[in-house]
Length: 473
Image (tube, helix red, strand yellow):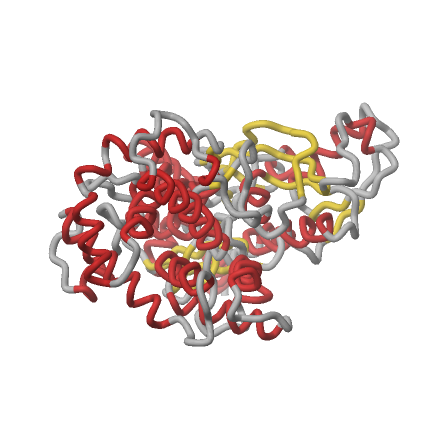
């Protein structure tokens, strides 16, 4: 009997032993389970599969570990911690900032990015210039976000500061509410704001509440130390290798601004770079029935007329052709200027042919340019959205309003080809229109003094005007 009791106690103690470290579990099952936000700043499912900055980094980390990546997206920040605490995820890659409250329950890895925290208002509603100016105004923020802790700390100095917390919305939803004047103010990280402002051009930054807030992966306390250590090694090496910079540029590079004075650089490049390739653009234009200056404008937008240009996403050459496009066109060297220019001309002409016959000029040209940038299938999705909203899908004005919606879950989830960074083709077309106008003037006035900006080069009324910043893609 005594021996039986000893055996039973030993068995019970064995079942109560601590589970192996999380890294060992990951390697044993061959899966890295990562909880993330369903958001363009973290993770989305596009027509070609998963995408997003957190996905790219987590996939690279899983590859280094030699395991499969399993992303577990959630709709709100409040769901992330329970997923980690329950053991349903090994780590969180969701653009989380490091806060004191979160540190009570989670370990954070080495920061891989940083954000500025903005107070957001709508243009025309009165810009707050200090915390005193927001007292008494309606403020809504995402529940369980680091912004709750930030406002709580401000409340110590401003006892009259009040706000509401909403667990059923994402940051994009609150920015929309500010744009529609359903709430006066909200708080958003710079990454979320920089993307969503393309949908709501009237939202503005009133104040910077915090600068350089570090962003890091999060891990449950206790058994995750070994996984955290490997993740830190990965993040540090990725910073040194340039992977972090590439991922950041891939998803946030479009938020960089250039002022209209950038046209002065364009004129200098027209004189110094374009002559090497002008004859190629002219001949390609004749071959494919396209104004060569439009092709040259595309080339400038794509590469600034640099034949050896290569982007982090793998597109390359003067016309920045993807490998898939080069294969479709039968090109074996995308860095060869003639291949690139003639291939780009042919590809653009093909997009023009695919635009519905009911679309007239110049809308037909703008839609073909957008298709060159984002793919024709996304143009078809945007046309469908315009029809749903009662607009005219044959006009660029209506289509350009619908394209950014392809990055919003409530829209792209209903469409055949899914998520796209739909603001990019709109900015792309607008920039090319500016360059095209300048090229038309310069070719008619070849002896224009260096640096002089022709009045004819001022963009059409629907484009940003002189002195107003324009965003590049």
